[in-house]
Amino acid sequence: MTDNNQDAPSQNEQATTSSQNSHTVEALSIVKTVADMQAQFSRLQTLSRNQPINDWATRENQLDNLEVMLSDNQELLAKAISADFGYRSQSETQFAELFPSFTGISHARKNGKKWMKPQRVSISALYMPAHNEIQPQPLGVVGIMVPWNYPLFLAVGPMIDALTAGNRIMIKMSEAAPQFAQTFAETVSRYFSPDMVCVVLGEVEIAEAFSKLPFDHLLYTGSTAVGKKVMAAAAPNLTPVTLELGGKSPVVVLEGANLENAVNRVMMGKTLNAGQTCIAPDYVLLQRQYHEEFIRLAKEWMEKHYPNIEDNPDYSRIINGEQFKRVKGYLDGLADEGIHPLTDSDANIDSRLMPPVIVSEPASDSDVMQNEIFAPILPLVHYDTLDDAIRFINERPRPLALYVFGDNNSEIDRVRNNTVSGGLCINEVVMHVAQHDLPFGGVGHSGTGAYHGKAGFERLSHMKPVFVQSKLNGLNILLPPYGGLFKKAMALFLK
Image (cartoon, rainbow, N blue to C red; front, side, top):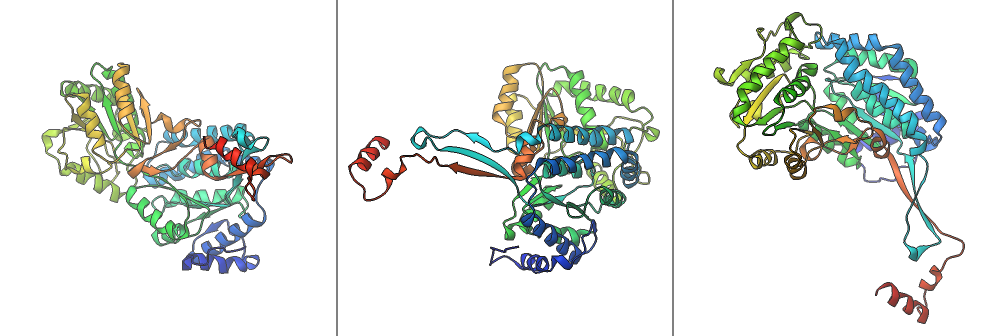
């Protein structure tokens, strides 16, 4: 390996030193110490420079391995997730994690060979008969930092893009979901060579060291606060980052909208994984005249879809006691008259059951309006005019998702054209994340960069520009000494 960065920080120097001796380091599928992590990174980095994966057959084989791994271990992985949550609906894991993983692999396998081919692009007539190409190339080693809320899909989704682009991978699993992390690491080790995929386990200090490694690209999914730390840690190495963060994703219910449909879709998005979803509807903007009906319809929806919620096998739990206390604290800071339970059950810290509640018109400085809720609490916020709703959204950090419900196309277009968000759904929530032909990502405080499908392939490739000169060309007229022909050409070009 050649290290061209003479002024890199000590972390890079350590990785370089370790890579020089990588032939003596045993390849590791599972890493649990900083020293082993640095050594394994250096091994992968050296391999990526010496043996770039430029053929489709190898990439397709890795996607096949990933598909077989998921197919063989669906129940094992789902049970491990449920164990970390205290209880997580297996149906939710199938719907929200396994299904988009399988369809993502299928989409990449169908299109990847086409994506990796050099693409001819247009060229100015002034330079013909030369031509331009864009050649996708593997970056090398991609780091993936996985959150706890959807630990399977948010590991596998980036893996699909990285493998399709011909990269080697190191994955740092969340310490907040330890049983799944261990199970996933052991499972990966049975299906992938450590020279292709390595899983890193450990607490915060391991995560900090991981983010300081000089990856060719680092993809982090998690909170905005930690995302800032990850970007700062990556900056000394000039490591490019994709940050998939969160924020407060609003719902705008337009005047005259089908309120029953809006409630149906919003409640689906808010109760999925007990609200622990980065693109869950965070709050609803609607006119005050619809508040009571919205609450009534939400209660009816809960009775229909989650009856007897304490024993309902489809309703998940809050991940741990710390998160439960955080969310309960949000509610404790609100006036009782503004809280509308949607079931007859109470929050229970022992089982970590958090039944959904609606909060009507909370104060703008309350925790539920200042922080990403990440739980089944749904504030209803009043607006008078659509301009007020748009202004409310634009006065706050740009959200990861924005949802609009209504039938008035001109009003929908006003929201669509006058707000900026990572993604937008019209008369729907959440489902844009499963569209493999759409890029998924945030903007501003909700993230930087996007992936999924072709966008992910390009994000985790170097899209190298190539200029191909023809044997017969007229560029020699631009060489000195600059005579009459040159001056005539310049006069023509600059006219």
